[in-house]
Length: 330
Ligand SMILES: [Zn+2]
Image (tube, rainbow, N blue to C red; front, side, top):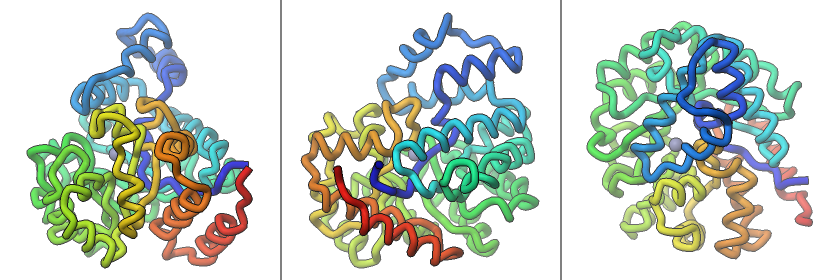
């Protein structure tokens, strides 16, 4: 039995495995520029964030109907559950779908077909987080939040993702203010390829409650101190960092140093179909390569539930935390 964890940094579009991509392409009559699943898997060996994003957006063409989004989410939940994920806070990128004529209703209701019964079907509780593409305009983010207004009973929070450099958090001050007024929780990618200053800006200007990635905080000891003091969680994604060359090798990852500093770190998969592993694979990799002890792994699992947006169900959080404490490592 795997260690029970919450996954807090997961882009549902990044769970599209080559096999499902071909299945959905056939169902929807979409031509993929790859001969077969092997050729597509080969294309998943990109060199950096931009080449990954180019492929990521191109492949979304196969997602057309509610059923497609439902199938995508169910495929993720089954894989995640098998690796110990008991709770998942799932990102989606509506602008990438709206831009190709797939409406907010199709995306949200399609995902909800799977998420609304995820506890019964997979034993995984879920929350949904709407992400804005930071390389799109602030106006586009505002229009996207407006389009999501009828579905806010399905959406727990907002996030900020895609190409980071040159798109500082402050660009999205207004939309984060509106989201806060609507009672939405706030997170943002910061300090992945962008500088540590973006982390500070996300906290001070956007009022985020968690930092996605954030590993470059390690370059600024005062910022690390602040994150520890304010108990700001980081949702780290080690295998993603290796694939996108944010770190040279996994052995260079700052996770052990950040844990030693007292940071509330969590380990997540980001875009697991593209980055070589789901949440449990990421935990296995950091255990094997960084030499984390069983108690360090338990700390990561505990952190994941503490950092999750389960304030609306503290009883459930307490049950998950009790499972973490009772877990016996093999
Ligand atoms: Zn991400």
